[in-house]
Amino acid sequence: MNKQLSIALLFIASSGLSSTVFSADMLTNDSPWLLGDWNGERQKLAEQGFDFTLKYVGEVGSNLGGGYDKNTTARWSDQIILGVDMDLQKLLGWEDATFRIGIGERHGKDITNDRVHQPNATGLTSTMEVFGGGNAWRLSQFWYEQKFFDRKLSVKAGRFGHGEDFDQFPCEFQNVTLCGSQEGNWNSVWNSFPISQWAVRARYQLTSEFFVQAGAYNKNPGNAEMSNGFKPFISGSQGTTFPVEAVWKGRLNGLSSEYHVGYYYADVNTKDMLKDEDGNFAADSSKPYKMYSSNSGWWVSAQQQLTTVDGNAKRGLNVFTNMTFNDPDKSVIKNLIQVGLIYRGPFANRPDDTIGIGASRLRVSNDYTHNTELLNANSGATNIDDPLYVPEQRREYSYEINYGYQATKWLMVRPNLQYVKYPGGLTETDSAVVGGVQFIFDF
Figure 1 (spheres, rainbow, N blue to C red):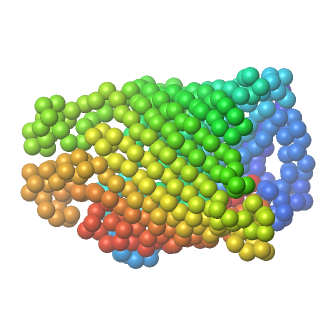
Figure 2 (cartoon, rainbow, N blue to C red):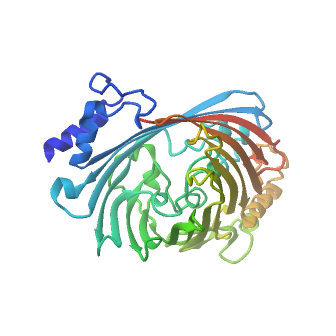
């Protein structure tokens, strides 16, 4: 087993450095991987229990008009994911057991922060979703999963992010409000990929289409620091997040369907957005903001196929929505609402391409906004250019249209056009137009 593991890790390390060991099918259109089957070694390793993830995502974004800084330029941001799933039944004889190691790296800049948002009013939409988590390598996944009772119950423990299991949502847009698990983007107690934390998740499959799950995730701000990417144990734990969720995945009238509803509770100290311990406005009293011993929120999402094409269920129109809600007394972001359409296989000769249209609204907590108004009134700052001015963020709208071109089985190219109204949640900032292109490689 040690020899097999060494070979597996060697292939992860060498996959981007050498092409001489790979089979002749590398770079062919019908291969699922750019580097092919490694001269047959990849299939051999899969039979032994190793399933590899070697993925690269690169995104370019350019401010074409509007925004805080109208000097047009472009920015590049990317992500590397290296991972391996180990089937422990094949490797060690442990029935229904899996172990995964995943390493994530992000690098680059976000045109949203550089040009679209006012510099002091970041933290809302990103038009380059792959940006975030710092320019660093991280141990993003290090977990063991065991299934019981004819695989109805699965228990997973180790290091991983909330969105890997809870509020799961596909990422087929470049705007972050339309991509992936949303709850983790808009509260202060969740960590999103590539940041991980110690956690445990239990899932029970009630029927073939319906399951419920619950988890416990350690909250530690140190996990987000770039210097702690590979440190397994970090001091400074602040509490635990407890998400629960019910998920139904099936078919309605023969059409693919997926529905989620979930809730989280966190026993983490949280500051009130507006008032002090006496119930007065903290900006006026200059007393410390009221502290709570917990925070909470909930989410609901739906994906529903509406049509097929000539009986082909892989083609047709799909609708989606995702809504997340946080406690407005304790959170900067009150809620996010997103809706959209994806048409899969728009042309008979392009069955794997997609056309996507999406829209979202981020709503800032009224208490948070009122607090910034009071701070500005007390300081006398009335202009966004005043260094004492605190941005009075309210709401932000994002829209995106894209075309996903499946150039080969291992390469997706997704050009997109985005429109952001009230960038950074500021009504005084001009609406922005951003052009982007997303590249997704499977190695």
